[in-house]
Amino acid sequence: MFTIDKPLPSPSEDTEPYWDATRDGRFVIPACAACGHRFMPPAKVCPKCLSDQVSFQPASGRGKVFSWIVVHRPQHPAFMEDAPYPVAIVELDEGPRLHGRLEGDLSSASVGAPVEVTFQKINDQITLPNFRLVTGT
Amino acid sequence: MSRHPLKGTHALAGVGLSRFGKVWGTSCLGFTLEACKNAIEECGITRDEIDGCLVSMPAIMGEQHGWSTRVAAHLGLEPRLATTMDMGGATPIGMIQTAALYIEAGMANAVICCFGMQNNPQGVVPQLFGSQFAIPYGDIGAITFMAHVARRQMHLYGYSSSQYGEIASAFRYHASMNPAAQKREPFTVEDHQRSPWIVEPMHLLDCCLVTDGGGAVIVTSLERARDLKQPPVVIAGAGQEHGAEMIFPVLPRNETPSGARAARSAFAMAGVLPHDVDVAMLYDGFTPLVMHELEAFGFAKHGEVGPWVATGALRLGGELPTNTHGGLLSEGHLFGVGHIAEGMRQVRRTAGPRQVENAEVVFVTGFGGAPHEAPPTLSYATLVLTPDHR
Image (tube, rainbow over all chains, first blue to last red; front, side, top):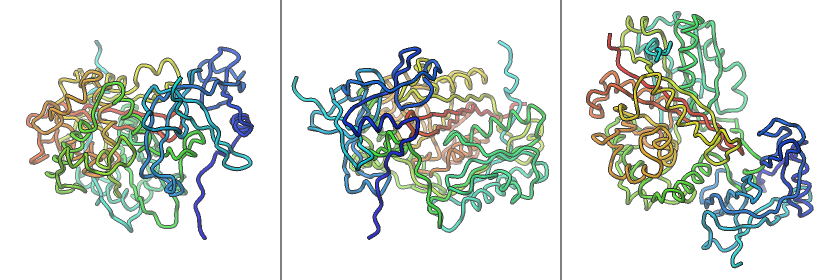
């Protein structure tokens, strides 16, 4: 039967350490040794000071919901089976923002709600980081 | 303050749209040529006088290379300048600005700026743009991006979904008077609320139409345009900025929204202020984008756009008649050339039942880039158009 696969990350030299880490259940983001800036998405050059002294450093995996949406009509057929599904943009405690599926009780979803990273294994190469709403204290 | 060297020096001499809507079986090239022919015939310029050809990058793989030169060749042109440009939905206005610069520099006399779009191409698959940090989650394209923008606006300012609905309803009301519009049946805010979710918090009626078609604009000096068939539409102001601040502030300098700068430059060049604008043609891929533009361009204060829009401000007869043709939301997704064409009609007083009386200052915007990327690149291009008062 003809099936359409979901598009997956294709790690490059710029991004491989990020995907290597998530595969091992670790969460790292780029950090600039020259100016201390932490950013996403990964790139060889720091967008703040243009230094190339960029390495991947552990991050807390904690942050807050910056925005969240629920996709009812996916723009790619492979995601039809998931719809409706929530996607968040999370602002990490370290500052950078990134996307992830939003997990947990959606009735508590709101901008500013605390979240923590989870790891979803897709295959032997790729594990996607997602974010789970943290309820209680 | 000294006069901007480009102020009032160049004009939109002619405009042409192809057939548009759900028009299957015609190619991207076909629409482009149809629109160019219409624009040339509309203003009566001699074909051989056109010595510049700017074409928007087609969204179809395999057709990009040398595209502008190929379009020129199909028009029987051997232009001095030809370039394929890509600023997303800001491209048509970007092309017009580039054309004016070519002419000002003496590098061209008349430039045709055009695009074509076929959403159902046979045998080719549109490329999935993408960031490996968004797409694997199913967060793909402009729709999800704009849903995030809406969520942020609702969070920051307390805007309600029905305020977005009023934007869409106002533009549809205008489209009901536009015989060429793809969707002409008026709807209410209640209808908008009942329309299905596409990406929460956006309903179906918050989203623009999918349109096959093309458009073309001919730019030349005001002096030359005066001798052509149509009244020249004067470029009084122009602005362009590229930023990333809406969702992902990459750099501190992006804290000043680039959209605000793009409008400020155009207004300053034209010597007008936002409240001088008689008619606005705002790029309206999605209703949250209109909200953002009204705020960024200085038509209402941050946080006050939603309630202001809900008073009917954007309707004909309102404080700021906007998208009197129906916009991308109802006339059709003509990549912003529909906005330019309607802006030209308003300046020429040929908009029929949609005419805004004494339209002297018309503000037209384009917006585009790659929201599917992280960080998204945002491109704003603006024009202030006025009649020729010689």
